[in-house]
Length: 477
Image (cartoon, rainbow, N blue to C red; front, side):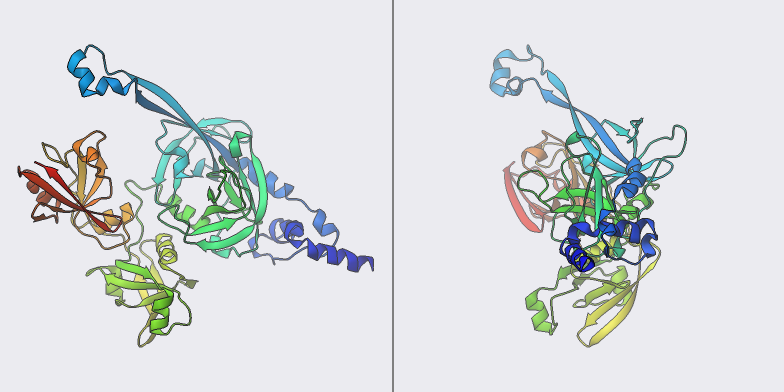
């Protein structure tokens, strides 16, 4: 009778008592062990402590410093003020130092650290502090804003660094136990536990690659860049963001999957922007209406809406109207999940696609290629007395489109930088604006744009595309 009572209590509190999984599926057997729940009174007395003791030394604090220049007073730039006082008063600037705090994970014994891009973005100085209080200056090897990841390097001082091996995030299942380790609110290294609440979250809108692990393990400000651990001690992902109305944890946290982390680390040794495979196709989600129209039992997959004339997709035999429902054995629910699978694949390999077509299902082998830089960028800073002065522009190519995160097959000229206070900035031009037309001239290249802005018309009529929308502006000449 006593055993029956104990078993009922165990099953009733299974969501919190399942820490027995730590020994059964983690330390006892690694990733290959059978997943199970505690079946005895002793099972619920087990602790996460052995796993934390093993992993915590590899989770670090990251402190950044950034000098910010601010004008002493905007009054000194006011035309009315300067009309009377001229340059009698210097345009003084004050320097203010901004500091921020985040977390990171050592993933290699030589001191390779992974964190979030937003933790170190724009920093002049980056300090990495280990759990044993050793402090190191870090150098940035790779910044990848599209995935919100950054790779840092700290130099060894004595023995090799403790580190956490990156696991295969595709092995995760909803309901698996996970542990989050980081430095929330700067209070010191903190451990929280929870479960995997969801996988392949693609409607979060945090990064260009919306494909996240969702967990209810408490994640708070300062946890960004910290470790989300599996029960075998491997890295499931890097904690990135939370959904919160108050700024604190409300049980909905998101982590970049370990497979994306591995991809960014692999690209850290290269120079220039991180290259990912190129599909050469525009995609759209399969909506309920589309599914009903073509006879699908449910809306799933990524629908090809346009093909690049010389892209890998067309050469592999894909067609407009095809629906990709699987890649390398992984289900494709929408275009975001397909983008993630392509982005975490290796250039030079092939991908096996399952495709739904009007006349039947087909399997297609897709060569994973780097996007070509055709035409060449021809990076140019626009100058002169014209509305776009101060904007730096480049020719759009598949390589540039992939770097900028453009989801559609766009040609032409794109703005990559705008000088603060320049005519282009004052008119509201932004990076990633695609220049379509200047007066009566269609803009297809940087050379065409440079020629168009050399004119001196009575009025400028400019058209751009921003976030898929066409915008126009008229400026007096």
